[in-house]
Amino acid sequence: MPHTCPACGSDVVRRDGEAAWRCVNPDCPAVIGEKIAHFVSRDAMNIDGLGDAIVQQLLTKELIHDVADIYGLTKDELVALEGFGEKSADNLLKAIEASKSVGLARVLFALGIRFVGAKAGRVLAESFGSVDALMKASADDLTAIDDIGPRIADSIVSYFSEEKNKALIEKLKNHGVDMTAEKKELINTTFDGEIVVLTGKLELFTRKEAEQAVEARGGKCTSSVTKKRPSSSSVPIRAASTKKPSNWERPSSAKPNSKNGSNDREDKDITFPARTIQNSEYRKERKK
Image (cartoon, rainbow, N blue to C red; front, side, top):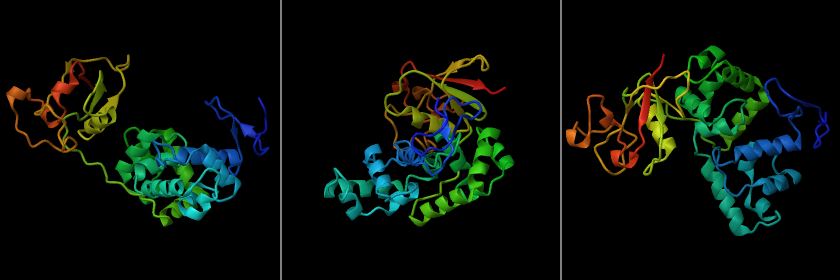
């Protein structure tokens, strides 16, 4: 294993608990390239058309030096790149503009803060509502939030304590990137304190949508039942409609109806069609 970075010649280190060796130079072109590639990826800022080859051209021509510089690119600069025409430049500029409004959750994930994945980004955005509030949070404030442990909390505090990262946030704000989110408000407490396992095939809505709906009712989702979490009786989800309602993410105004399978547990409030669940069911377990 080489002890120096092939891109910039700086030392490489392997952190405790990690298999990968990483360059210690934050200004390494390879490190910057990876940060930008992550920033523009689909689950982050979702800037379609800004692939690795384009990023390398922009870095080589020194048109960008960090992720915020993406928002200062002009049509003339893009058209001058190899393989770019006016139409492709226009499309990329539209994608860049659209990414400004993806919301705080995606921005936090896109920044590449160590240990902060897409789920943690969403939890933090819903809990604090703005990047300014998050930047002021202490480790104790962060660990008081479900799903945010000491490792993530320490990483966030460390990230926002660095002046260069504060400057990057300010730069993104100045380019009009939305750094806010609606604070999470529970629709009801149908799944309060429960862990929900989604199983089987969901046809008329995505698994992510189902997870968000459960979380909006006080529950948490996991991918499987584990030994630490003994399974309990399974309760099929019922709804008052055989189609995906337009207001599925809001409280249902429908009244209980035995014909539609509503029961005393208010499963009717989760407006998921029983017909589309088929053999799927929500296995719900009380947290110990």
